[in-house]
Image 1: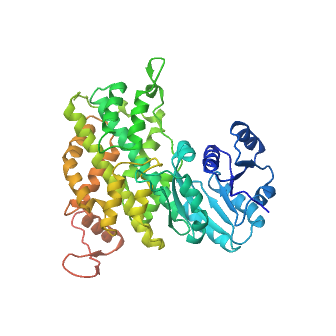
Image 2 (image 1 turned 60 degrees about the vertical axis):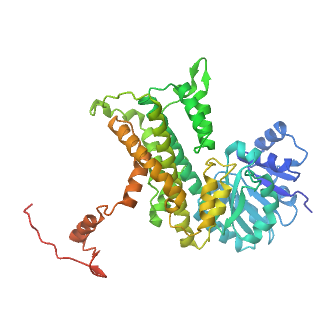
Image 3 (image 1 turned 30 degrees about the vertical axis):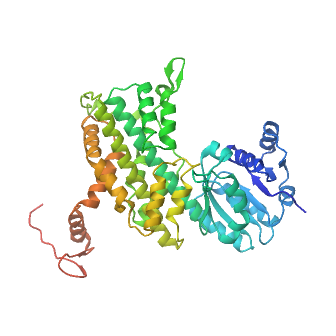
Length: 469
């Protein structure tokens, strides 16, 4: 009979560090990798009294105490299905399979049903924090049956990051795919957050004329105030890094890659009818960065002259713009949580989600406490922008955002996320966004009908051709 508390399959960066983290908290861990060499290297480099390696899958499964807790830390997609197919015949009713990778939430819903047919629990677990988080304390978003969570919570709440109030950044967020959905949107917000930071950097560098060393000090200063966050902090570090007397950042090719979770977020938002324009803008910016060989439009479209505005007022305006746009990015992400919760019947706790993000994860930020408070005060607030705190902050920063975005556009500096934030705010506040004309055009060529402002119901108009074409 097995005695190990938990088993981890996958000895990559995340799996290895999570195994060490769990072992450090006095839990015994069996580890297995489909390539024995990876397991051998891990054991050689990270020998730990609480970690036992296995090179045979059946022996690995047999080593675990019941109900078995089997965690998959492998590449998302087909490899997960293949591994489930291998281990299901070796499990018993009541065992728990935990997918800790970046799996698509609809795949998790499907796998939940496959495992349920054998009486096995399937848990889709979103884990944020990267290598350091996995080793020292990640943010953990758990999806699946609450019965399964009760059997594993003692392990994951122990190893998770702790917020300033010592509350673990780990929680059961909902059934089936809810955990992976929450993680997916977290990553989407992360995309938008990084894009906004990149735009602030570009504005200060190109228009302000600041060096990377000067910018490092600026971002470090910002990290002491309301913009305090993990990403702002490491931005200062990246800007300050040197090699052989030169800036490391200056040596990095101007191309950003992506793994797909931001794209998934955009696709799901469009399907749900939720505007996540900043997340989509961030994805598009990465796509454009990849076409370096074709980024030669200045030959046809000469770029405008750029005046320099190196002044404290400009730095403060950019800071306010960044903070204001950041609020919009988080508001869009949480609006998607609200809509998906209704669609899938998940009953997501938005306050608790914000609390999970307060430490351990990539988007941890000071104002997540305020988001948590906002949902504690009104769990059904339609949009975070309507909470008094954020409404006030938007009013404080809207002028700066408008000014900075206009300056950037006039100077030929791409600021798609900042401009997108401004457009989102204007569309929310504007009495008309031109949709009436769009609907009129749709009715003209396709008889799609429209709603009227003076009558109830759907109407089709017999349009006349007033001008010869």
